[in-house]
Image (cartoon, rainbow, N blue to C red):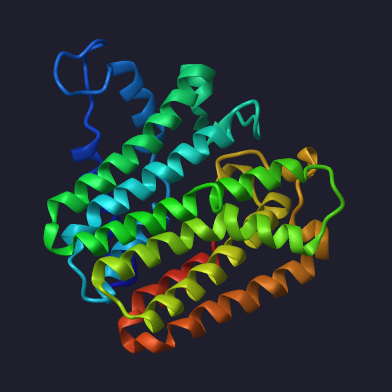
Length: 303
């Protein structure tokens, strides 16, 4: 199986799990244990909008690489995508980045209004944790591993993780670029949610400390390199490919790697991090072929 075929297989698993966990509802005031139709539609509008599904694919691939039970990993992968999607909905709001388009179509608040977009994001975040806890109860023989996986995801998505990075990102707008502050922002805003699926997979599969450390190093390097590349795409990318406007970081006064070190140095830093990410996988030998392929694809992305 080629890398792209395997990637598509993981995405297919995820899409099926998302449909299972969050099916459409058709009642405004449902009598059964269902989500009200308007709220469900707003949640699904963003959750089912496609995208690369990077984080859940990493979770599923790492779990399989480590010999874990991929059936136990499907719900955590879906929950992670819910958390990522909620962060995008809130990121696009007028009080944050105030974006009109996401993945080539109107953002959630442009379709459902600001209030319901906030509730859609809140709903996805809360439902993700419901799903994570319910999944741990479904597999009592691996409850500790699944609870540790849920904890890894919650920690890296929370007030010492992604939310912390987002908070400092907002506070740092129009400030003079600072290397330590920028690294903190991108470690938590971006890298934490790429490390979370790898660490969650390690706990589900019962990996040892050396394997967890290697995966965390891989996730960190991928996360920072990914963010540097994202900053570069905002400067040099094509809006049609990205599905959103370019040049917005400078317009908002965002602290970015090109602003800090220049475009050429940012490219060099990204290349070094991609190399370090691949070196971190050496402990896994040939089993890490998919993750090597993932790194190779991500470092050449144009959107």
